[in-house]
Figure 1 (cartoon, rainbow, N blue to C red):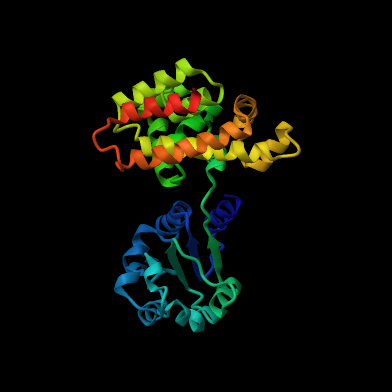
Figure 2: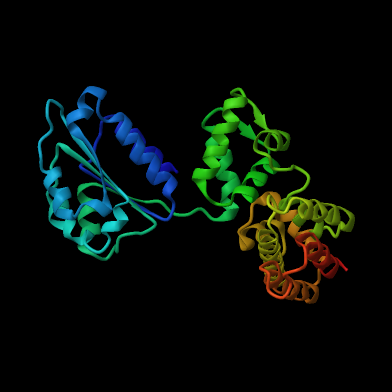
Length: 334
């Protein structure tokens, strides 16, 4: 995120580089940097003759180099953006000659999503010298709530930990999807607002009481009544609460519990670091480890594997999701 800020700051200050090679698994930052260049480098009058958007599937490297070597018309720079540049992956190394001597009046942007260059090869080394090579890495699940907090903080909002975790649990690690939902919240909530679980429930439609985060909490605490209330709600609303996702999240939870049992140091700080979890969850894991000895955890993992298969329709075609969830809870919690 700091690297993205620096790239944007340099562009704002008109410190341009001739090539921006944006690559990696996380499309969100690639799109943001590319969009910023597209919207802000040239004036509207200059864009007509000096800004071009090409698509990797429609062009080859020679076409791109030919365009890049042109001079701008009545402007200091021309901007060429190659979207879906990963479609050029088989021939991308042919860009080496241009990367070694790029046209200084051209700003050439590659959106090379879901792939990366081989850092041992000449192209990567040449681009690193003459331009900007930015690798946009996927964030791990446990980093998403903090990412949400930092994004909102930069826009004069705060968010309660539970609200951030609700968003993370419901939306996963897709930063573009999360950013879209945050934009919706900012439309209805004034600057300076502290975003709460109630705001999430009212504006995004995620139940603050009946979600996988609360189910995990209830199972870990062995709160049988609450766990059965939640799975009853899931059974009544299967489209919004697919069992496959519930089983996957519980499997991840108990797999980490198994790892926790093997730790020599079970202090909160050690547990947080070893399990790579958000500190908000640490006490929940420590409590769950007390409630589920190692042998029980192994048994629960076997049960979850069984219900993972059943949730996908194998051997249980006629059984409703709600009934499967109830049976699974009885097997897990006794």
